[in-house]
Length: 222
Image (tube, rainbow, N blue to C red):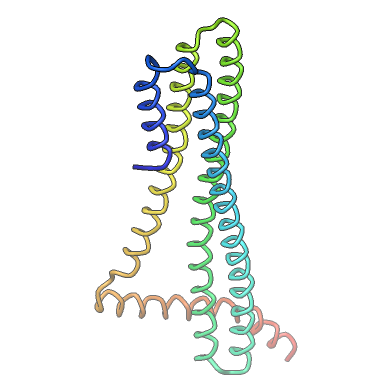
């Protein structure tokens, strides 16, 4: 059970047990509000961590994009120098950088989505908490403490669900990424052999296309 669900269960149980036994209902409500506020603060810390991780992954993706272009440039230089094997290897590394970049871009998008949803839910929870506090003031003025406690419990449950839904979406996105990674690594040796040959053929075509402008330029200069 999550922290938010434990908070809600504890708070509701406490109210049910004490509502008919003590006079100071306002103190119970205030204690519940304080706990909810603490959990919102914890959620904000988690949201900041998600955002920081998204930033870190985005920086890695940008670095991979730069490295991919560097390897393509090296491929052209190697081919011009007559070293075809080095040129092919450079292109292969360029493609590897591109594939890793795409994977990171997908993760960044997932982190961003989770961070945005979490931030929205936190904002909604804070608004509902403010509404609860205002309602408590109104109920206190009317000496209707039981209604105030029930309203607070309902708001606490809604806030709990908002946070839990966000964490569920986050876990689903992470699971999808893990499944994609597992699928990429599950190819059998024969499949990898064919894919390797097909990749080399594609690389040779790409190298030929890359060098064709240079060949034309050399003929014109000659």
